[in-house]
Length: 297
Image (tube, rainbow, N blue to C red):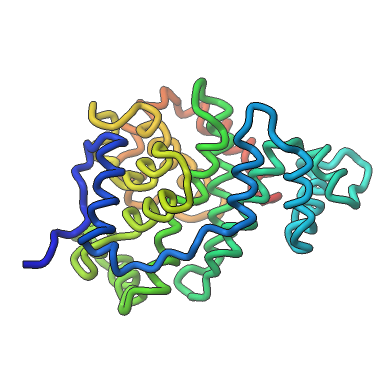
């Protein structure tokens, strides 16, 4: 008998999600999924940021290691959102203007996108949209007490990272994405699991786990489409908040792109906003404030 598909109970705790991913990796469908190794520079960046007093010299050295990454930092520092009227021309100047946290988030975006290139028309602008979602998540975290900005940013960046991974290593997954877009009788995750016995949420969680991100991020990526169970007592509150904020970030990004609300927003917007204690007026204010940040991203 074949092992069951990798579909954990939505109420799973953060620890239970970790166990689910481990089991699926050992004997379930995830054993056949090839996850690219975490970029060496990203591991070095995480290590440099881990101490109470981060190693700024190491961060600067990592930032200067890749010409394209250096250029991305300088371009961000000179953008209308961050620019101070004086052109920035070096990595050191860019880091000073952006600050360590913004520098680290931008470097993470660059390194992740480089490690997982997307060459598929169905995921057109995948990393551009992932960066925008991450920017929206970081903004929302600043409005919510107690939600770490870096974790929120990572959730926005990684929540759909399973899509390009599955496209690269699972035969027929491109056709599955097309089918999922056309079907109205079941969710996209249900279609993925019916065809492949796993889905992009589980695969994205595996990427986060193997790349040494926090258990909270692993769980939030795994559960980011489990919105029917938002607020149930099983998962940690921070995971629920990341999932709810992720839905809001996706909606605000779609609004900025003049796209209609997606199925998740239509079905679960009220629950997510109630969990976050965010009203319609506040949401409209966020939309206005995010537009220049989306343009910069």
